[in-house]
Length: 324
Image 1 (tube, rainbow, N blue to C red):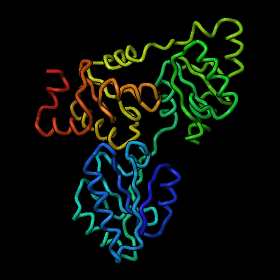
Image 2 (cartoon, one colour):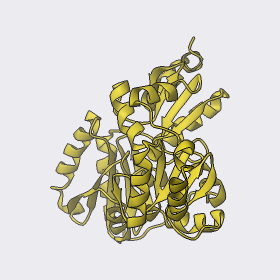
Image 3 (cartoon, rainbow, N blue to C red):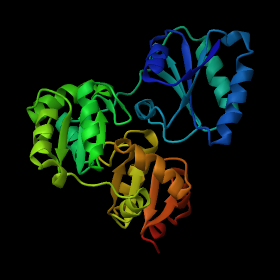
């Protein structure tokens, strides 16, 4: 038996390929119940009858793609896999259930259940959502802090020279976007810069516009972070900061909160923190709330998914979301 930290998609894919039983613990450092369940795992590791089981410790918010794949909306959650197929799950800090189900599945030699497949997302819709997620959007190799090619690095230097306010998307992390955007934009190379959802062009075009003095006036300028956050928080009476957007949540927590909000019938807007690392990190400090999603009503923080669930259970949710 072994315990592994699952920190990358490659780590997860390696575990997923195993024909032996694997148990994924979707956890968060801020949740004390997760640490308690890790103690349970340590005890399970001492049992000889489950010596071939591999436990994977996975930060649910960091690997949102995996959380979304298994519809994980709260921590701790345990997913039991064999050969990449879902065989069982435990939602919550239920030590007895975890012990029983791990022992049961470890004793089985055949698999009858399969993992539910997520419905395909229309690529053009996805590309439009990413492009429109920021007024100025750059598709590049790497990130602004770590460009992965010379063209991307030069583009970042050009935008930073004018203190441009822009979002970015690393095409190296998503082959579907990387190939699909070439056709969508009819532009075969990267980086690609969009302003107001319209393609401006690549590095050569940006250099020409810079030389002619056309580039700087069209670039949105950065604001002080606190001013940006206040503006975003007050963009709509009901505002949600999340991974992804309402059409395509990118983690189980965000998917669940969108489902709850949609049931209320209230109008709301979302901001995808995956498109803006400055907002993603800055809002944690600004709000003194370390996780996402975050829900704001008339500029005031209501809380995250757990708080929204509590308000829903107590019948207070509608009033809270209306600011009453």
